[in-house]
Image 1 (tube, rainbow, N blue to C red):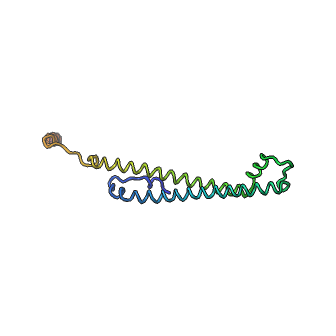
Image 2: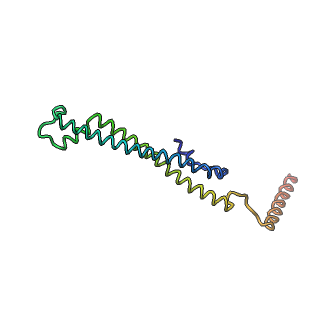
Image 3: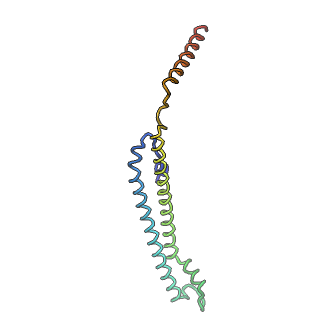
Length: 159
């Protein structure tokens, strides 16, 4: 996911940017919702694995080298150390990481939307246009420019 190209706005192509932004946003919002669903499924699977491991520990405490009477803290520790639990926990962590990255992308697209709106406001205000000069002021500017050019030519002729 190229983040710079995700938020880049070409001020010279505001019309294209405005009309393509919604599709881009929808794409990432759908991916984010899929990632959220994946996290929920992974959390449910982890809960099932935790229950199965706990059941196994309580049923066969000697297999886990636990002494009777079994303490709850020992069971919790054995659950966390169990390879199957660790495998599902690492999957959950990866899914949460993906969800976080997609959430950051959607947040960036929200910010991009506001910047597109501001860019359009600047465009309609004439910010990107050529400077406009009052005709009387333009005449003064032209006169001064011609005067400077004449002085420069006269100086060059003397050299």
